[in-house]
Length: 118
Image (cartoon, rainbow, N blue to C red; front, side, top):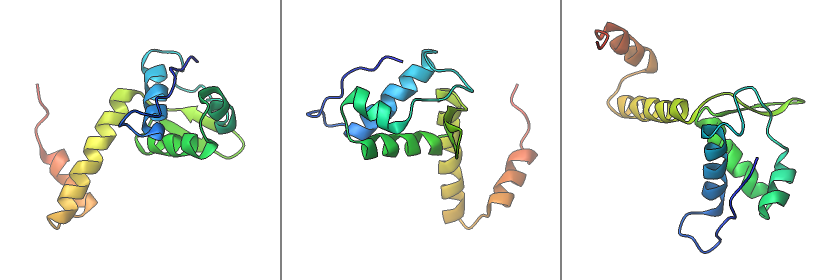
């Protein structure tokens, strides 16, 4: 996996730059679904950043549905950037629905009741 240098003077935070580089590697097929990423300490050394910065980026990607953390098996790629984008939108929808007084199950019922596009 190749990485671009992190720009410490950029307005984008370092952990977001690290996350973007991993997203790019997944999108360009450098790392494929099911493949393990190097340990955070190794990624930190390659990128010349703090290990905690890498861990924060990995957590963000896990929350997007791109990565899975399994004790003893490391960090594996489980999704695509497209899947991560959809998961982000689902999270936004669920948050919006919650603010409107809807429960998760009610939102699922609303989605199931919608006709399929096409």
